[in-house]
Amino acid sequence: MKLVLKFGGTSVSSSQNIQNVATLIKKLSKEHKIIPVFSAISGVTDDLIRITNLIQNRNKEAASSLAKKIIKMHTDIAEQCVKNPKIKKDLLNKMKSDLDEFQDLLHGMLLLGEVTPRSSDYMISFGERLSINLVAFALNEMGVKAVPLTGKDVGIVTDSNFGGAKPLMDTTRLHVSHTVENLLQKKIMAVIGGFAGADQHGNITTFGRGGSDYTATIIASSIKADEVWLMSDVDGLMTTDPKIVKDAKLIKEVSYIEAMEMALFGAKYIHPRALEPLVAKKIPLRIRNTFNVDNPGTLVTATPQADTQKMVKCVSTIRHTGLIDVRGGSMVGAPGTAATIFSILAKEGINIMMISQSPSESSISIIVKKNDLDKAVNSLEMNLLGKVIKKVDVTVDVSIIALIGSGMRGIAGVASKVFTAVAKKGVNVIMIAQGSSELNLAFVVKDSDCNSAVQALHDEFKLGK
Image 1 (cartoon, rainbow, N blue to C red):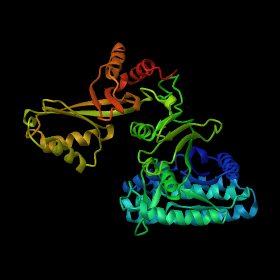
Image 2: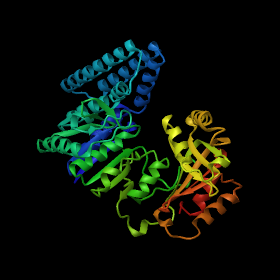
Image 3: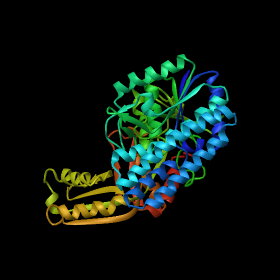
Image 4: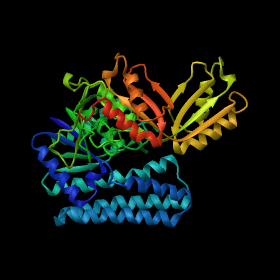
């Protein structure tokens, strides 16, 4: 089998973890053609983003101090994860070359005192660029010929939307298949950095948080892999957050569309766009635990087996969001009111997570991220208050709860069961939305009621059984 394995940041967070991952890859490579993709070491991407923020705030000392911490961490792990003197020397030389470039970029940004989307992506991409060096040379020491390649090196070509780039798939498939297949023929393993590619002008671009999953599925689609494994620190997708419900269970199998819904509703173990490249080629994906490889994890496939079908597969949550309720008699029968509201928020770069409109057309309810709430309310009041809308009400700290499962389609009484179950717990439902696909039913409650509502639904649909 041709397998693309993506490893998360915790899998490479220490020299011991890197050794364990390299041992696993070597073991699997005896039976399969392995193409591993890696995230940055856990916490490094956050630190790199923090550096860009510190530069923007003209806090040069703090930015330099954080950069030194990143350099020391990677140098220390490089010293520890390889013992062979020659291979260690080669690794340290490669790390020095990349870290020198990192410092040159940092100095340039500090001198200018500004961060552009382009320079930010260049800076943030160094996390993966450094982690793949550590794994590739650890594999070399174990007798596996391996070479570290960034997304740009392997041939991922994207648009120029820095911070949220999309791959140009036709061009990417040609470049990636050529690069990877050539290395496979030479019995050389490509150790690929996730999260980043390059636009047609050669500028580094990134896919956004969790983008290493996306890299793995882009690679898999390009080389016609048999499966993709997303290796992290969890056994797979769960029926709900085990921190909320103790008897949450592993979900054995879900469809692509169910997994997409779970990703959009807070399943942080899948990038929301990561499944797109797999659907057309029908490449299965598994979510597995690096630290518990005996567990088969969750299989994501086009056609799950009949015995895995349930009315509701999981209860997902998005915590700490904000609700804006826009009201006004002038909105009734006025074409384009919703479009005006949405375009004003779009200009401010605010993503609308969920909407609901009353049939009377006199009010629209909108859910946004909590940190976007003030900006959203200000822009609506500045542009529309007293004209189209008469009142803007705000509810801080609400949670979206979503029930997801293809088994809900066409089944009468699902909503009744849901709202009866939460009502028994004394939970007030503030807002409701269901897509025409009937694949998910989402509603909003106060954040303080979230845990008891999730527990009630998990029990009602017997997800722990």
